Amino acid sequence: MPLPAPSIDARAVVTGASHGIGEALATELAARGYHLIVTARRESLLNDLAERLSTRYGVTVDVWPADLTDPTHRAKLADELATRNVSILCANAGVATLGPVAELDPAGERALVQLNVVAVHDLVLAVLPGMLARGAGGILISGSAAGNSPIPNNAAYSSSKAFLNTFSEALRWELRSTGVYVTLLAPGPVNSGLPDFVEESVVDKVIPDYMWVSTEYTAKASLDGLRRNKMRVVPGLPAKAMSLASTYLPRAVLAPIVGNVYKKLGGG
Ligand SMILES: NC(=O)c1ccc[n+]([C@@H]2O[C@H](COP(=O)([O-])OP(=O)(O)OC[C@H]3O[C@@H](n4cnc5c(N)ncnc54)[C@H](OP(=O)(O)O)[C@@H]3O)[C@@H](O)[C@H]2O)c1
Image (cartoon, rainbow, N blue to C red; front, side):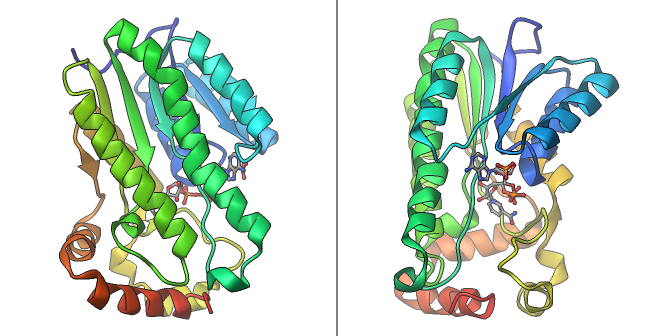
């Protein structure tokens, strides 16, 4: 069974659609004819996106503002998705923090785990029964190459992405004969703009230009990968090489090296 074709009765859902990779995924899905549910906290950005995509591609875009670190918002969205015909779920929203765990704001660290791990898990569990009943569906999970190894000064983020990387690839095997596709997006650096706590001049010194890929390229590669039920999409050759190294080098060698890079980025 191929990935479901666009249908007016079905929706492709994108979390974190107000910016960056999520916005690019929503745009690429709309360009491929999919009707959408887009979600994030910033409702005005979602409304602008919905207006742009419906005008340009003639698709229906339902806007669902939600803070996915909030269990009540999460449950409301999960309940809604469980009743809808969700053909594709892009579980993409995520945040990062930088610095030693002991020095970071505990509330921020808890929120990271709620968003990066619990929300993805909740939404996958919400859409899975419907996809299985229909014998078709696609789940794209935004993990990260950062989830391939422990990263000091980025501990909660890299661990949250390790959960997603492993969960996605395990789920894919469980679902291999059900018609439900699961693909992990595990990128290296994607040019979606830097968070406030990272200085551009520092990033320029630490991450060479050739490592970056665009959000548009990432979205296209991800959805092409999902269409082929690829296990993992790592956009760009440099990121592929980095990903291989971080998967196969001994952790005792890798962790201090990568931890030092994250320290230079502002993590300590
Ligand atoms: N960019 C990279 O280099 C890179 C590399 C590897 C993996 N990734 C992963 O790819 C995904 C997207 O990254 P990105 O760079 O595109 O991020 P981004 O540009 O910072 O966008 C993050 C998205 O998540 C939403 N979001 C943040 N906090 C939220 C919350 N509490 N509730 C609901 N939505 C929330 C944001 O919208 P609102 O602020 O409006 O809520 C925004 O739409 C993330 O999971 C990230 O970890 C990114």
